[in-house]
Length: 291
Image (cartoon, rainbow, N blue to C red; front, top):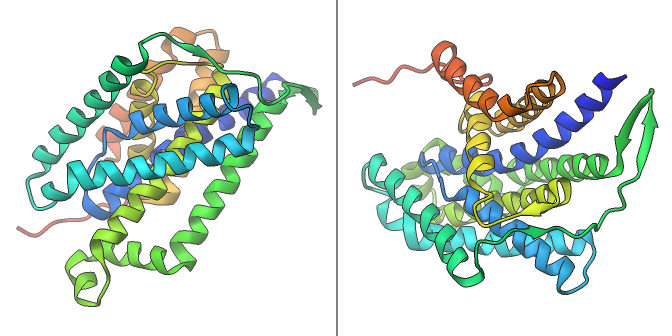
């Protein structure tokens, strides 16, 4: 029953990508910006969780909450300092700024703490359970279960709360939302905060899952999460979830077949294929723009 084990491991890994991808897709859905500094928020979440566990002796869930809170504040700070003034500028200017912020955070972090990696403490006892003949680790089940809860909470916020309704209104038509009395700046800051908090949670999950973190760890997972967002349909929240899960399963299957060196390449092969055959993504719809 190796396929069951690979499926569970792939979905657990994919849920990490999905949490990061949600930040990409939420921000793009509102201000049409690809926030390439999002991978560094993920990295900061991993380190905040590490210091909360190793330095303060906290358990998994308190460390997770602290990492999410710190990353929410970081996301709001990035939006306020780097992106707000560029909101009316060209997309290429915002894109270059996003890449610049990403590099700035990486090397500022290295300057203050060094580039050496850290070994994540074992905060979840890694037991194995026999499910239909497959050996499933308790870490995979914990990561998967917590990720599903966070995604359900996100869906509730977006569809049932006042700020969620404001986010959907701003995403549909920013000027009309402003005329209806919605504070657009507050709504966009809240979007960055929610997306960044999910990236922080993904950082803690990544540290628990892979046990090793370092200041440049956000680059590859960040790019893969972007691929997941494009795969599902950039700007569509359910698409980011599904895209992340699909990408995680594909990577696990590729590794299971003995091609572990190609697992990173698989993500970018998927990106090329989706751009060639369905640029709008799985959940996206082709829309013509009148000129």
